[in-house]
Image 1 (cartoon, rainbow, N blue to C red):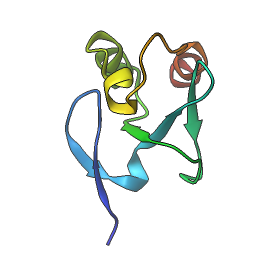
Image 2 (spheres, helix red, strand yellow):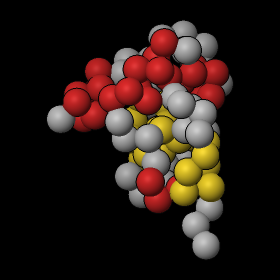
Image 3 (tube, helix red, strand yellow):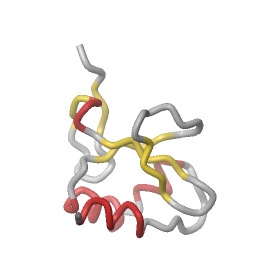
Image 4 (cartoon, rainbow, N blue to C red):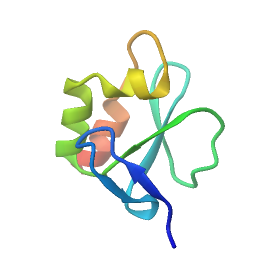
Length: 81
């Protein structure tokens, strides 16, 4: 049985295997492919719509407990193809 996590964009629950784990790097968002990077993580559906919702709600900073701006351009480029 796969663990269930909540997407920070659409707030729907999904199996962990269908979501991306995002962690805060120095000043940017980093995709944690193996879900083993240290630190607090946030889970996101790998779709542009969930990414845009998370950005609009400012969910990354809240979920990762980071004050200030985080650069999301690499993540956005990855999701847009």
